[in-house]
Amino acid sequence: MRSSEPIPGEQWPHDMMLTIEDRPTALLELLWIREAYGLAPRGDDLPPVLSDSPAAVHDDTVGTDARAAWAEAWPRLWQQTAAHAGGEKDPRIFEELHSTADGSAERADLLRRLIGPSWRDDVGGAALDSPAYRAWSESGAAAHATALPTRLEDSPERRDLATLIPAWRAGLTIIITIPCVGEFTRRIGPNALLVTSATRADSAAYRRALGTFG
Image 1: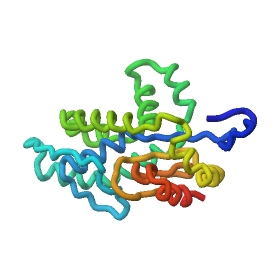
Image 2 (image 1 turned 120 degrees about the vertical axis):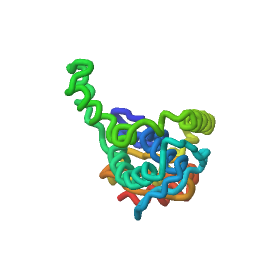
Image 3 (image 1 turned 45 degrees about the vertical axis):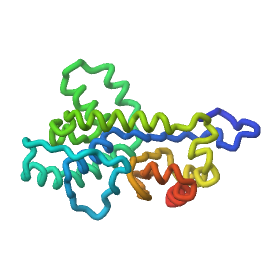
């Protein structure tokens, strides 16, 4: 929410605006692929496993070599995709899209800048074309919609407003959640914080996460 001047009795700062991205498609794709195909990527700062573990995909067309290549690519794509998710979007891209022709190289470049890196563009779309991914994604979206608070005052940001305000004053404008187990909090840009859904749902954990920004 945002207003041009303070609202009497309102604790939310009138000029505070936040973007809450709680279904980050590109990150969800990566998380699903890692578990559904049994990848074991190596890295020092990789996210925990999904809270809703997908069924294993048994695809004879994806051999050992392909899985090894996917596992090698995964950490790099995770870092790139998370960084893009946490970046401020340039509003001029939307304006420039209107002035480019369908199918043109200029339009394709603008769309890549807008959408950011993805598994499909880097590795290919075969894994994500699986009916198993569509079923898992649709199930997760439905569960997420059901769990949304019905009242604004019940949102995690309202609940933990006292801790959120100092984080916002320190520059926080984007909060991205991933449906993974436990606590996993990372700054993924000068203005963005990545947390798990479990962290955001738990007041004490969310306050700890917000307290890291500053």
